[in-house]
Length: 164
Picture 1: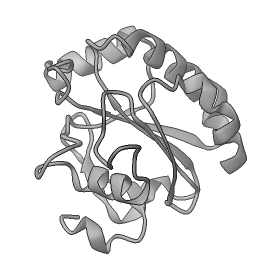
Picture 2: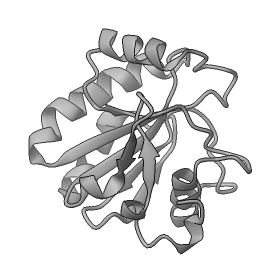
Picture 3: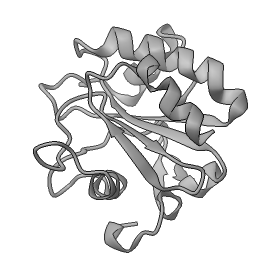
Picture 4: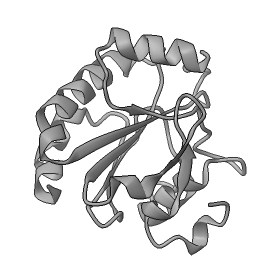
């Protein structure tokens, strides 16, 4: 959806998965989503990947879906190809859904990310400050919370549980 301003929920968007295939986000209806911009070379990578994997393993059966969007906008910390990103994620035992590399800021930012930022603005501006910004989306497809890159995924457990 190019016109993100007319979207009523994340379900109005179609994005590309890590292989380049179109994925309509309405396939996630009825699930709580944790949408995060990821990077493989960031100082926050080890903790975030480890804890995202743990959240996925613990809450997948209860309806959590983690949607990870690689982004190279912050100090070039996700420079790899799609294959590189998949390989890295496998080494981290990540089984959550990976999507095509996107921009999260600027005029060419992904429409989905423009929507998320609009619905859940940040401190000192709506722009994404760094890798591993996390959005919680409820079962109706509404962005309900935004968490900073320095908020470790395990600290989101009580937040996630209230939407499950």
